[in-house]
Image (cartoon, rainbow, N blue to C red):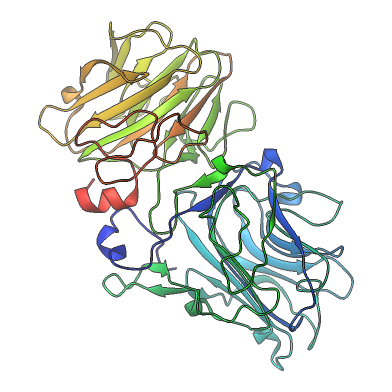
Length: 475
């Protein structure tokens, strides 16, 4: 499958079509867009195109995460399954159809481009519904019950349609994660190449392209999510705005298919396991972490460069530790608190919330007096320098430096991942801001290249953890 924005892609996306924003869906908030459509151009032909980034593992009734749905019979385009979600399109009635791909989508750090292109007038049943993932048409299905010729589903009829939530009362089946460049086409079966293209210099990378010249049809719409005060604004040739439900300006994100920001990784929790229902969970696009005797890490690691991110403390923090760890970090205890029990080569460091100490793990755990104790609603800034011979990390408490921590003895050549841990049995919640916060900052400070939205200005030379910066610095 073609790649979607791996770590070093600044050169690949430079000068191409840029996507500024996405919309973040947090399933627990019951977020969705809704619109009752008018008279369709042609109910037998339509196309849905969207870029998505996966959120929490634990979400969705019946293990379904709805992308687009319509009507009482639930004509729906969705992901089927939690840990191994497959792309699916089905109608829940006796004369409907169901398609479920063999291919699954597991990468929570990547943007995927998904297309469902429908034309039930086609004589060949496999041409009536076409799926595309990252520009490639899907040919293998676990379930392949195609609609009858000239079948007319509820999609594109005069019923309520939703983006991000089931339309029936039998369940919610919400989307959790991010959506960008949502396009609904009324009356045409388009291919994936009408919405994206392979990069000229890096032909394995599939990237978005300008869709403004497409024929949208009477009910067609294009949601680019660039107006935070009107996320459902239609930017097609129509004015088919969609109503926001339980979505706010803070749900607009700068995380996009052309500039992928770091988030928490629900697939790589303490001990190498995935997030659990009880001890470690991620929400709000994997940017809010709740932990009980667990450690969570981010999905982007760096071995070179200077990097800045912030962590806001949301609840009581007796066992909070904010820092970073390497790819070998797999200890059975808390972040930087005890010696690695079994993970050879595990290295980590952090700023301890209870008393302001710092702790370093390099084969055996050490700690030293460092900064002030951390309180609820504090924002801890992390400035990690792995670019120089003398590697350092400086922690900032509400904008004030707590001093430079020498991490040179951790060794060079390691990739370090932002991490937050809690060694106490009480739940701790933190909101991670890699430049795409879940909350409104009182000031909006970007890095020197104009990326990120931080409460406090990054120190000179320190950059947000996003693919534009990774590609330009070799991080």
